Amino acid sequence: MRKTLLTFVAVAGALFGHHGWAEFDEKAEVTYEGTVTDFHFVNPHCVLEFDVKDEKGHVRSWQGEFSNPGQLRRAGWTPTSVKAGDKVAITGHPARTDTAAIHVTKVRFPDGRELKVGYDSQ
Image 1 (cartoon, rainbow, N blue to C red):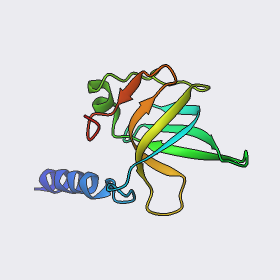
Image 2: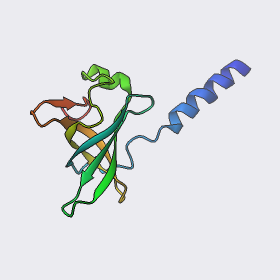
Image 3: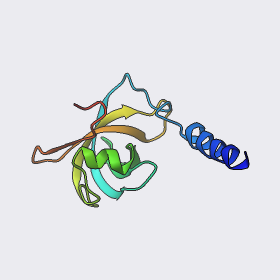
């Protein structure tokens, strides 16, 4: 009985602990051009950090969120798909607040090569 209860608590905690994509406006799509500062190919979500210059030359640091590494691997990604210094255009769904965050659906390089994410970028 105790083992069953502990298993239930562990599974329920994992399910309810995941926030999903509620913080992003999945009906809106934006693209930002910037420079990669870091890429984290880790669980539970991969994260792409990048800097974007506005029209006045001010730099704002952004965070692009993805699903897990397994899903990205199935879409062709590796831990070195993007590297610090890469110039990229990031497309995705913006945060609902003024937070500099985006739920990434596609990354495009200046040479036209694209890395798609696989969930809604097909």
